[in-house]
Image (cartoon, rainbow, N blue to C red):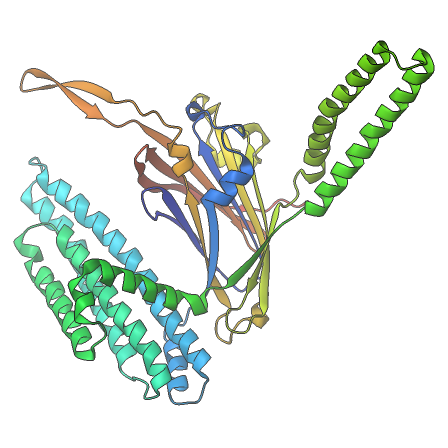
Length: 476
């Protein structure tokens, strides 16, 4: 299962959990409207790959209390300090990721409910029915959050070295929880039915603030300065993610082949030029103005055909082959736990597979679309993972800021009637991107999903899943 969401104004975040299978294939197709005029002359494939695509992997566990159990064993000196740091980081990271995703969903529901209440045509009874699911989910979220923080604080380590790391994680989770709850309080609909929830959230925020003060986690000058506080918490977030994020060693493939192609083409072209020079010498005899002119023509032809021949031969040799390779290394033991091959190129609709074409449901309006295709094929080694963490969580960030720069800067207006008068209003031009993803594991089926991404020049407006299905993988 793969999930797509908006990370910020210009980035899409694709996340998936990799199961026990050792082999995984991922294909990401981004259909860019033809009216943007995207081409390799404007943005080359290599430039887009290096500037817009980033991949990271972290350890993941289905047994949510397992990391906490390991951290308690380490605190009792039954496991090493590295195990304590890793287990506690994984427990905190999985809580942070779940809390972020839940808060985003709650904010979407709260904003929709606020817009619904502004519509005077809605009846109060219907609005009351729409409030119920949101209230129930908010109460459930705060109950789970309280339980997770209590489990974390139940056994504080006595060892000074372990306590410093515990304090950093506890400090960040307390502040992070407070920020998520305050964001919900700020966007909850105004009304009596949400008064109790709002009071409970604010009470939890006060409690967490007092807790951090009692523990003396932050100096007063840091608390008084929001910028310093935010920067410190960002650093603590990086400290949490560091021990559970697999290190990467990237390598661009084909450098040796490229040098060999260059040498071969140079040798072939120079061979023909040398034969031409010998032939000219035998025909024209002594060095004359005509001989010099013929020599200049030969060298000009060499420069023209050498580059064209080299580029053509290189494209033919590398067609369909991976362009980059990553190695994933365990950050604690420095052991290689997996490898991944990657492809990226621009394609046309006609060159796509039948399953992708059917998923896209091409119409006349999409004839000029340019397809950005990213593919990865990874092979992991679960036996080399840390005990209890046979899963990984992969995050792929796709930055489309370079594509938004191709959109029109002009202002656009529409006219409509309001109170019997013609009113002009500013409108924002938006473009519809289609994102088709195919994920294939070791089994003989592939999982396909299609997402609609609405984009304007100012950023991503909306992301919505529109279709998903499974398909049998074709045999080769």
